[in-house]
Structures are given as structure tokens and as C-alpha cells.
Length: 247
Image (tube, rainbow, N blue to C red; front, top):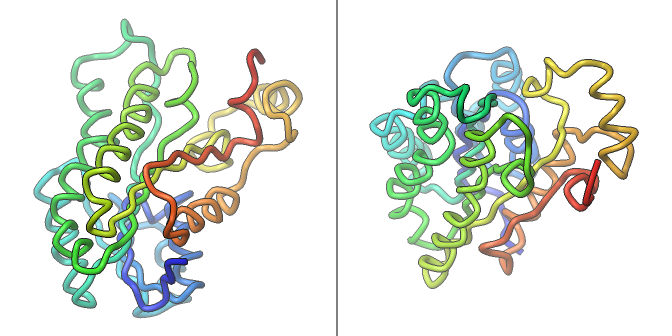
């Protein structure tokens, strides 16, 4: 197993939701973390109060290539190393292809996909020194059809072949690259979901008959980070939703 104690993790989108919970679990296992977000959050402030100098918060937009590279450079200076990279930054992009503007389409790639290129290039010198783990947060929307979300499911789906390519190319350096694909997880992402939609999901779409929690996803993320014989794989955390033929 790949122990995380004393190692440094950078987590984009780490000031809320799934990214924040992954940070918490890494900290509980003895890692140091740099969490990134576009704006200050109460959750990030609370994490600093709890863990002190084990946490650094770096605010900025990883859709900006220069910022993404600088984030990695600054983070590597924290402890002279960088061992774990988690790209959890993202957000919903609703609409059919006829609803979207070209700018919205391009921005979806700028947030979800393109940062992996810039983050990995910048992190590679650190990761290649003694191996490390990269984790991309995708979605079941990237695995199965999802109505009126063409951009979102396209960018989330793109993370999977990207991870496999990186995993294959850099395995000899001890760099593992994996993907987690959450289903319906109760975060801000689903805050606009109606009570009727929630009831329908639980009764008809999710075989385990409940929504997921960020803790469910983060514990799966920890397995992908810590199991050093897994690379190039996708782990789905959705209560069985994506295995259904209809629903």
C-alpha cells in the first residue's frame, strides 16, 4: 500500500464538496494538503482551524493555464515535494447542444479537462522523483447518457481515456493515474434538485435506495490513491445507478 503520511497532496476544487472531503481524509491519514478553489469558503477556513499548518489554501482558477502551473510550483515549495494530485474542480454545464454557446462549450473543457494537461506537466518533475498518485474526479454522466447535459458528459467522459493514457505512459516512473466516477452525491452540485426528483431517484434509479455522501466518494478516492497496484482504472460510486438498463 502507498502510505500518505508525510506526503503532500494538491487538490483542485478542494474548498467544498467532494474535494474538501478527500482533503479531510488525507489529513486524517497524516498527509499535508494544498487545497485550491476560486473563492474563500467557510469550509476551507474551518479546515485550517482544525489542521493548522498541515493545510494551505491557494485561491485561483485552474482554467487559467498560468495559474494551474503556478499552483503546482508553489505547492511543491511547501515541503520540497508533491506526491498526490487530485483534480476535483468542476461544476454543472446544463443544456443540449442547441442551447449552448461556443463560449460555454469551450469553458467546460477549460475547467474540467485542460487543467489536467497543465497540472500534470507541472507536477511531473515532482511525481517522477519517487512515484505518486493522480486522481481525476469524473462522473457517471461520463459513462452513461444524461439528458440535456451534452457538454458536461462529454468533458467528464474525456477524463477516462486521458487517465489511461497518462497511466500507461508514466507507469515506469511509478506514477499511477486513476478516475472516480460519482453518481448522485448530495453537494451544492445538486442543490437545485426538487424533492420530487430526489424521491424519484431513490425509488426508481438508485438500487441502494439512497443518495451518496461525500464520505462515500472520498473513501473510494483514498483506495485509488493508496492501493499501489491500481492504475488506469475507473471506480464508480453511485449506489448501482449506472448498472441499470432503464430507470
